[in-house]
Amino acid sequence: MAKSLKEQTTSALFWSFMDKGGQQFLQLAFMFILSQLIIPDELGLIAVLVIFSAVANIMQESGFSSALIRKQNADEADYASIFYFNIGISVTIYIILFIAAPWIAAFYKQPVLTGLSRFVFLGFVFNALGIIQNVHLIKKMDFKTNARISILASLISGMVAVAMAYFKYGVWSLAVQQVLQAMLRSLFLWMWVKWYPKEGFQLARIKALYNYSSKLLLNSLFNQIAGNITSMIMGKKFLFSDAGNYSNATKFGYVPQSVIASSLSSVTFPLLNNIGDNQERRNRVFRKIVRVISFVCFPLAAFTFVAADPIVLTFLREKWIGAIPMLRILSVGSSVLPLLYLLTSLLQSLGRSGLLLTMEFTRNLLTVLGIFIASYYGISQMLWVVSIMTVITFFSEYYVTGRIIGYKMFHILKDVLPYAFLAVLSFGPLYFLSVYISNNLLLLVLQGVIGASVYLILLKLAGSKVMDDFLSIIKGKKLNV
Picture 1 (cartoon, rainbow, N blue to C red):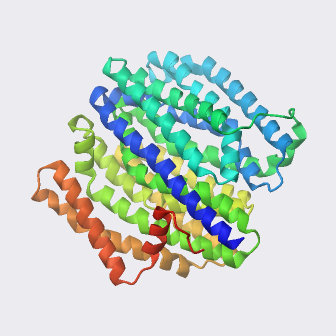
Picture 2 (picture 1 turned 135 degrees about the horizontal axis):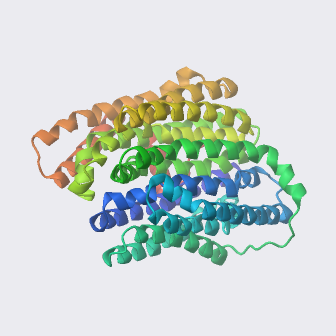
Picture 3 (picture 1 turned 120 degrees about the horizontal axis):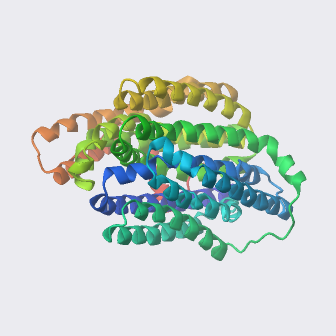
């Protein structure tokens, strides 16, 4: 059983990275092309709608996916009831947002947002159709199929968006990309995952899962509102081009970290849940994953901070230069983002959704208040609030959770800080290469290659074994947990 779990975990981690990494690679590739064909204002129009789509997606799912994954004996009645619930909620929310579209347009003083929002919001209706199929893949830890589906949907929708942008459809090319990707992903899930509802809707099944899922729902809602309210404020208080620059900055700042975060969280939740009540083994697995994540996320954040100028100027060109300071600020907070996702998976596996809700609500409330106050002083101040609160949250939430599972602050710092220190030491001095090198692509390559080489050499000299664990994942070998 232990050997099987090791093999299953390593395969799941590998394909989850391929899934998220492949999607993000395609997103960056298409963003590079689209940035040449559209202007920041057009991207800003889509960016201000993200908060509505994000909240709608959370509402339709309502935390029931995690509840089903966590439930060991979920049956067809559970799956069918959640499926019909998701469909009903998504259609209801869409109707509400359809009616509210003129008010959204009036709020931003952009009449085009009426029709645009009504089309973009179709995306979360399509998402609802494939939620249960996705749950089946996660429970089986079949991330290989998930990767194929996601990458294919991203590739087709991105190609269509580029074609539309080339023929001057502007912001509508971005809207079609979002909706088409959601539609294709659900379609492919139905084609690859042979599941359809075999039972009718049973309210009792919804009620049985509600106590656990409701806390996750509230937590996800607070996270999405806090995470997307910055774009909303920029579109209203500043310029739509600022919202467009911010959207691109978040993609570059969060791309490497979100790949790690979403890949690991999708795997670690079912993994930690399968371990059961063996606390010693759970802690050992958790600490190993903390070290692997820290090994990757801190140098990526340091590289993004140092290379913000050549990243933007190489991939997006001069018209997106406003994204550079935003990217640099966001990279600070993004450095610990995957570790926070990991903590969420741990608390979900422990059934401590109430504690997770309390901690995240506190963070998001303080973050939103800070953003509102900072908005009177400028965009940079708003973004520093986001990054600083993320770092503070990391230490506070790990401290609280550590008291429950016996993971002391000393161990937390021992597992995390060495990688942060070596990342800063390796990449920090490379910031000054820009004084001597004017070619942005050459500068970007040198900062990445030299920084990564120095980082790996320092780890080797320190006798770290974390590289072996990371390479085991990349090569698809057994991870010793």
